[in-house]
Image (cartoon, rainbow, N blue to C red):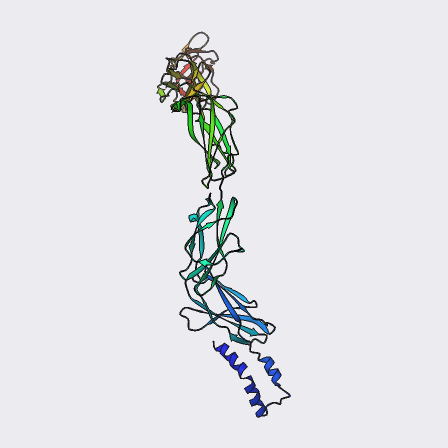
Length: 533
């Protein structure tokens, strides 16, 4: 504050300095005229009609200053609660200033001074006081939609607020000040669509909010079903089939559902109606595009439905609570599938060959036609998977599957067919076959010489997965099996071999290996023999 007081002192005592210097003969009037001194020490009057408007953490100041020719800028001073002196906080060439980042509920006092072109600050304006605060509106407790033009406005403002002004447009056309209330019922403008309510406020000191606050809501008074359709196209549906249902409304965020009803049957007949099928607009359950106002569903026909030319009735409630109804132009016919059977867990049978015994409950339908057992190496099993067997006897409820690989996981499902060709699939079961083990070795007998060869014999292999015998020969022990065998025998019942290629008087060593169909083998004992001539 001393700098401000010093500038005022210099300006107000300028003439005294001039007179003193003239009396002591320091300079003449020709060197320093009163006009020159007055020009260099212009002391500007204070800004007038300072108006303060409040905001959320802000204060906006506006003032009047008719003649700004001699003004270089304006200085804004502020004194907060508890401060003894004013502090300069800003400089501006405009006739307004917005002070931000203030503490709501705190008291702030302001003064404004004009500064001359020569940099001399003039008189300060009258001080104005303001307390920034939070002002807000909420419509219908913050809901997004309303189906009524009349809404409830909930207002938050400081305790010293006395007046308010509401409007449906930002220009506040024909709006009037009224007594402040924290709750006010208000009529939105006509016509569905987004609506905004604006508000101004004044406090007990006649200070106004620096800018209006507002709140938004969507007025929606009508719900419409533009179309309702399903894709059966006259095809007779069966339990498990998929019926795609689509409802176009043009609105998002609503609730859509349909009923499929055979009106010719009793209302208490559960097999003749399917009610409250929910439709979706979130990209799930068969909905193609989320949030496009088209509600869809892939409905899977449940077991037991029996309908003839059933109606599809649609219901829609939009986000605002409006309701609409419609009926699809097409009809739906559903026939019941045969009752499915239940598959038990497969039984692993002990054997060299992987075997699984598959069992199921019996079907008792009067129009039974056949069981079809399918198998897959993945869980994605269906009627299109590999057919293992078809059984036309309704009383046969098991099957042993032998065409399998060791150490492999298999999935099974059995379908029941009726005389009309309708079918129902059972539950899916799985089992893993045991890992393959090498076959048991055979015992090779000592070679016996006849007139032309060395004759070798061995015990027969009992392996169910037998592939072949492979006989190896070397001139040294142990027998080298890296060379090709001298014989491959594919019949497990052949248990002898005559080595006609043996060179006379050479000692040979022999081993025979049993190979299974998966490539595993087991070698026999080693024997030796010599063809003597």
